Image (tube, rainbow, N blue to C red; front, side):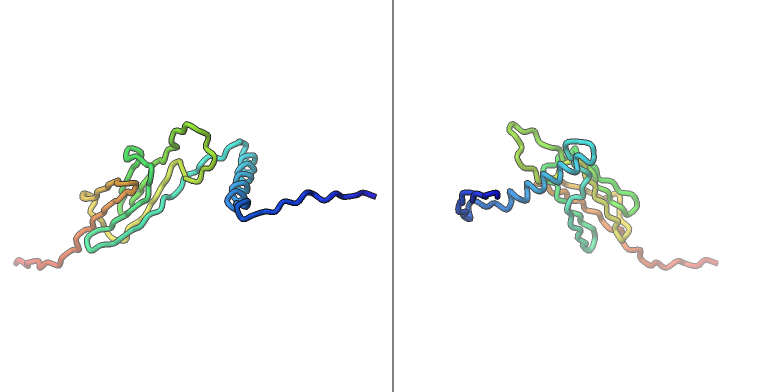
Length: 152
């Protein structure tokens, strides 16, 4: 008959348990499994959509997009009709040490929105300040009714 020895017990304190370590270990195992299924040892960042707010004022649409760490030379803002498309890339920064945890998204991004009103494409401006891209898209002036003279 087999005998089982009782493993030495150690009392755990609240300081020994780190739930984030367990979640991180689970995420790493899932990344490794996904990497094996894709035929690579590392999961590559895919295109992502940055967070954004759209505000309507009386005379314009204001789009604010969160882009921390993105240089203005890595951004492109285009207008086609009423559709605004913002694309770019958030690059991985150079590191001196070993990266132990990565939760920030890097890689290419794309944000698109179709505005409900006609816009004045000649007066659009975009500014990147402190990691926030603000695109101001003026509305076209509403057409005014005008009287047309009748000639004989």
